[in-house]
Amino acid sequence: MRKLLFVLFAAFVSNACFSENANKANTSETSSKTTIENSAESLDSEMVYVYYFHGKQRCKTCMAVEQVTKETIDQLYGNNQKVRYQEVLFDEAENKALVEKYAVTWSTLLIVKGDDYTDITRQAFANARNNPETLKNLLKSEIEKRILD
Image 1: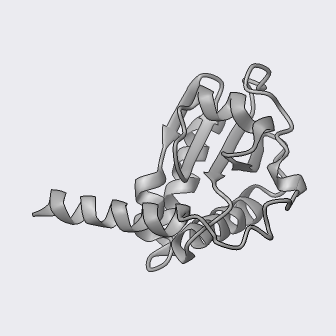
Image 2: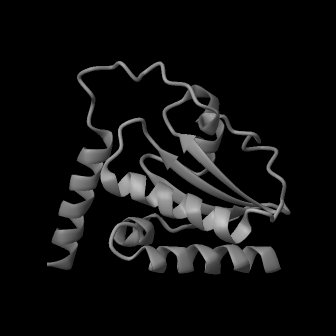
């Protein structure tokens, strides 16, 4: 029963997040948040990167994941030069190397340091809207592990 519910939830989120917009007015939208400062090959192995991959069309949960993650990073690590938050539009050509490196196919939240990374997407989507403190604590825990390495 749990598997069925999870599959239905995943299908719903996938549909809500990635459905094609009949009006493509926003397809030319360009933003500094989509530009990756480091290519997938040149990541600083001392830095902790928090990557939030997403498409152009997003549901409320997708936006909540972004908001909670961004706020957490700003509040806890705003002055820490070793932690960097980066949004990545996975369907933009300039982000292809990073998307391929982590085999991203839909909205994904990763904590990365060097070649070590943890995918916390499932927990992020489960908690961002109704239990944001749980997501904040998870982010903090995963980032702290990597800072101390």
